[in-house]
Length: 618
Picture 1 (cartoon, rainbow, N blue to C red):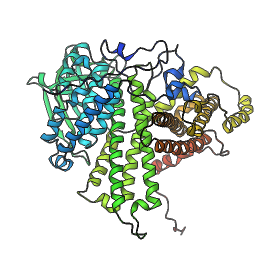
Picture 2: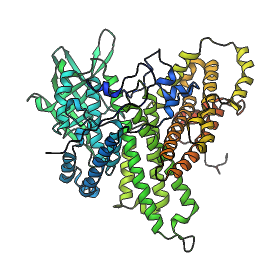
Picture 3: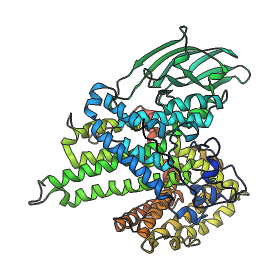
Picture 4: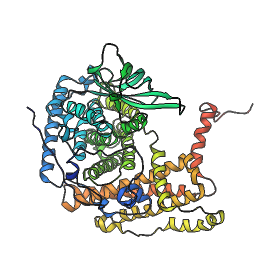
């Protein structure tokens, strides 16, 4: 029998009188946090107590958000450390990425390691027979699984299935499939709607409906539980209604068609992606969630992968840094005598940039997971979206760092760097940014407007307020004194964060008064605003983490203070530049629309059709 570790956690603080402890929440079915961007639901609770990013954008501060989440029970921490140590040792022995890629499937040794360590069970709540890992524990898990991206992606599919069942599944669906997933008997797969994915067509009504179509699917061959989206034309509303269906392959009859064709991908070659021709009769019991609410399920399917992905990216990037440090310490420099690559300032600069980015991503990931673990009435939809942007940035930076530090060796066939580059390219394609920028910006702006914007302003008022805006932008002033809640050496970083909060509040007011609803069509402005919101979120996470590390005397805490200071300085300067552009302080030329006009022109003329620089008029 396999060893079962029950890992629990306790709440440590309250942001509102309506908050419930995790212990109380665990009495019934586990409540699942939604990750798709929506809005704040509790109008009675101050916005700064519900949503960190929305509160910062409105220049509102809640000091409890600067307390970095942690395990309150030492025994819980020891349990997860012991589990991770066993998992690490097991994966180090069983995972051979070259063999996995050559076989185009997980090897038997890897499958045995998955079963012995009860990895699927860690993702299922204890109320349904699983180990009930907390979010912080799952982050540790996915950090270790990043030892091989095909392995990590396969487990992440299981995590998505569990989240969808907990969020949208009926009681019968949860009680039936979650224990099977925990025991490793259920292999989920799901239809991919991004990047040109198609819906299956549904015809008929009631319990006599036929689902038929060719869809792009993850795990088309090995899955025995499929999440698929069907489209049915509604004559009354004159549009297609999308519904998510659960297809149990073990229950299909001979009339069902299941023809799978696997596709070859650049990376993740042991991870199944392909086309499935499916024809099956469906009933009301096959519906996941509500009928015609399939797009809501699809959005959550995409969004619930963000924190596991960020955890895996963090673990992979730390492993990459260790590998590159070894290479640079052992490789002699060709430009400087009696020196290694690690002695060169240019190499140090490249690695410094990657390290601080990884530190910010790791801090943000555990910070967000910790907030979710504490059972607070906190909305983390925007923060998880910003975390996804961070993950993609770090993945791209990993590729450029490999190329810069390893040169041709990094692209040599058969070397692990080359495989990593291919895997990262496929990961970025599988986890696109999509419409995150628009969703984050519009959700933040709409919340701000609902709380603050009570009336429109005339043209003369906007002209007279221009000087007021410029004054506030130059010196927003300190209102919250955030530095009182952080380490003394981070005083400047806290002041920069507070200044950025004040400026964002001013900028949103200015944008709404000048452009109003036209903001929805201004992608450049939304992109700049989201970049500032992302910078503020990262600054909060690293300041809170560095303060905690130094206060309790963790090893290398002084380096964390250095990383936090360096990172916050860089992010503050970046935010200041973006806010100046948003404030139109560069003169009469509006910079944001100009960024898009060049791209629009290239589309209109059909590519890069500019004349050669030395061309003449004959």
